[in-house]
Length: 455
Image 1: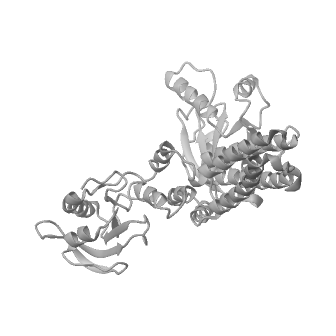
Image 2: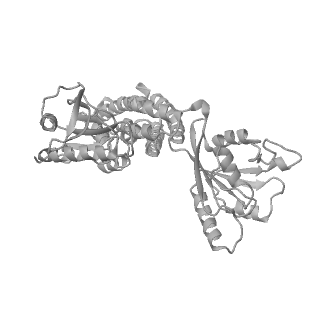
Image 3: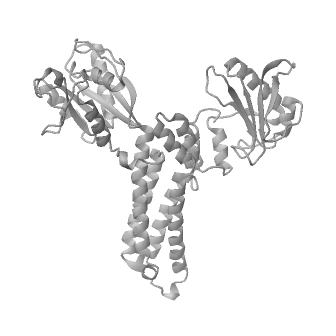
């Protein structure tokens, strides 16, 4: 029938792989009434649930379940949508899917790409790009706080802030353009319309949104915390204590951990990816040497480094070697473990800023948890009501950069009004990329390819 790629009807299993009580197959496309009739040999009314048999081409019943038909534009994608809700066995779902594809051949029905249903919802103005991303964030949320924030983003909280800010920039741009179009009026634009004051207000608002977005990024992506130190200082014991389970093998034998062990935990709803690594020391053991190389690779990608030492012994030459090799641009927290073996069991920071704990007894772990969040930049009092992504942070930062330059131009009054206008335009474009008003096809492809199939 010659549809373009975005007009072809698409179909996919919308529920996660594996056994389940219910499985859903979703079809979306333009004008699906005929396909719906061919599938069930009867006319079905929109927005009405039907309990029907799902049959194959030989009229054999594959399954029975609920059929729902949503007519455009009143659907998730903004197109006609058919949903078949049956039992969740993969063999059954696959048979139903194959039958849909077989019947749908003459309508150019094809398998959906990852995230294509949500992409069509975006293209059909059912949601903006930030809301579309929130769909994936809600599915992948690893904590209650992250799920709440993802839902807030999906409901449009983040987008509303961006749109309101952009509207203020647009009004400022309109005044600037009007002044540029009628230079003979000799209007002192910046003074008459208090442009500099308005711009300062916009900058403050954007700066506040950026701070919230940075909190939202931490809540979404979590923090990579790498444990480093000499063998047998208790890195694996600390991992187990923070995880509340026996994740890593713990023995008195130095060098037990030969490879990275990763465990995700949540502190105040913030996901932390704790990475236990091989003990750092001079060794001729080939396997242990490979583990040590991987330790340094993990260190280079860390958001925060915990340098563990044995509290019974002061810093030695190897600890100094480790300290000197740690990246200067990554925060490092020195943690002195095994205070349960000391006579003086200090559980707070000492004058050098170190923390004293016992991974075995739990002493000082609550304090350590708070410090982990604090050093990573998380503030419980300023928790973002919405999630954010790295690209959002980049776009907000770019917009703020352009507004700062515009502010500098404002100090020169009307002499550089055209440059002032250009910086406002670029700030406007940067903010528009968040909601998708100014977004390249390449970026759309990258964003939606990370979604699961069927969503």
